[in-house]
Image (cartoon, rainbow, N blue to C red; front, top):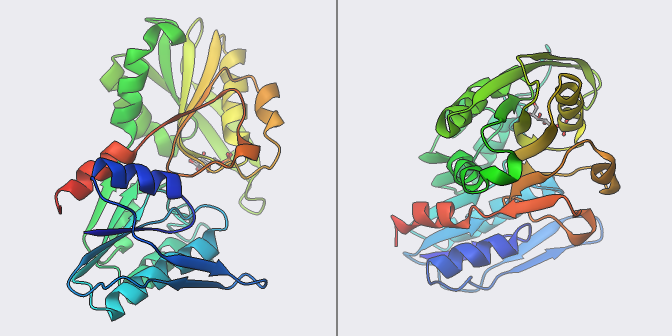
Length: 304
Ligand code: R5P
């Protein structure tokens, strides 16, 4: 197995490679002034299993193009198998045409990866699990839920023992919240969130269904982008009588450049995985990261 890192999350690739006792193979990624990206691999890939780790975080289109070039080169150089490890898959929110006339963009991404030469994919907590069906190649869909469950269980006293409640910030997260609550043997509640479909980041309705009074509310989402969903969920929980609100999400997209919004937010701590490499200028004191490298390495270990 030869493991390559796209430019979006080199620390995670290093960690995965370290667990597998491999070195990250050298590659060259250049971005031109106009944004075009160029990838170069000089290793001999003939009959090798090439693994490329790349999160489709910002700039998502360019990072997608990058991994597609890696796969294209590996295929052309006769790698026996090309595995794309995509810890954060952009475009998964566009898993259906929400309104007439829209593209099913995640299908397009899956097709692009396949056409580029990807033989199999390893994904993590994609926004809509069902979207895996668009990947017309063997695809493993991992979940960080167990990692979070273990973490919360080991730190129960930090959250207020016996008083936890898991909050799904929208109906789409109901089953994940229910499963996590089941693992932790605590209750769960669901927020009825409605977005304005013509203003993608804005929320129209946000109603809590469930009793959070005198509980520690753990909001459990797949991703944090602008943070609006989480902050509104925290507000509604506190209004409902929760002692405190915490936020747990697989992917810290953090699309707002001002991390001070989190200092002001009514949220005690924000937990994300390292599926996305969060730049220093977007980090904030409330942020904690748990690693998915062991989970991904274990999946890859089947091939070593
Ligand atoms: C939406 O359906 C997702 O599960 C997340 O709740 C959402 O993408 C988070 O976005 P934001 O942080 O911009 O509210």
